[in-house]
Amino acid sequence: MQLDREKFIRLLREKGLKVTTQRLAVLTALSKKQDSHLTAEEIYELVKVESPDIGLATVYRTIQMLLELKIVDRIYLDDGYVRYELGHVYEDEDSHHHHHLICVKCGRVMSFQGDLMEEFEKRMEEKTGFFIQDHDVKLYGYCVDCQKDVDVK
Ligand SMILES: [Zn+2]
Ligand SMILES: [Zn+2]
Ligand SMILES: [Zn+2]
Image (tube, helix red, strand yellow):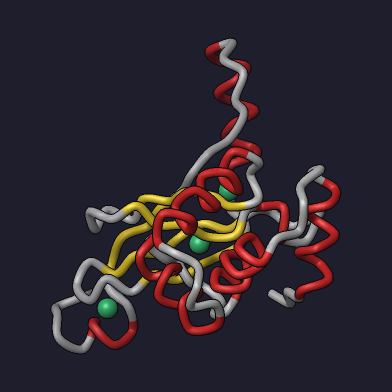
C-alpha cells in the first residue's frame, strides 16, 4: 500500500472535510505498517509520537468521523478488541478489498486479496432473492511459524 500525505489530503477534500492535523495524524498512523489492524489506543500511541498535543478523546472522535465516511473500516478479529484499518477506498479501485487470515495460536493476522465470493453471492441472490451488499471473510488456522508446534496435516 503506497500511501502518502497528498493522497490523504485529496481524499479528505473529496469527502468535503477540512484537512486537519488530527485527521492526517490518524490516517498516517493507520498507514504506517501494512497489515496494521490497530485499536484506538494503539493509534493514539502512534499519533502521540508526532503530535503530542492530540489527546485520546480527539483520536476517538476523529476515528468515529472517518469511520462514518468509510475512510476507515472497523474490524473484529475475535481477540476482544475493536480494531481499525484504512477503508476500501485506499485499495486499488479494481482490486477486491482484502480479507484476513487469523492464526489461532499467536494471533497474527495476515491479509489476502480476492476470493470466490462474487460467484457465490450471485448464486445466493438467485436462490434467496436477497440483495447482497458486502461480505467479510476470515480464515482461521496456524501460521507458518506456529505450524512447527502443532500437529497439522
Ligand atoms: Zn485488514
Ligand atoms: Zn501463529
Ligand atoms: Zn471478498
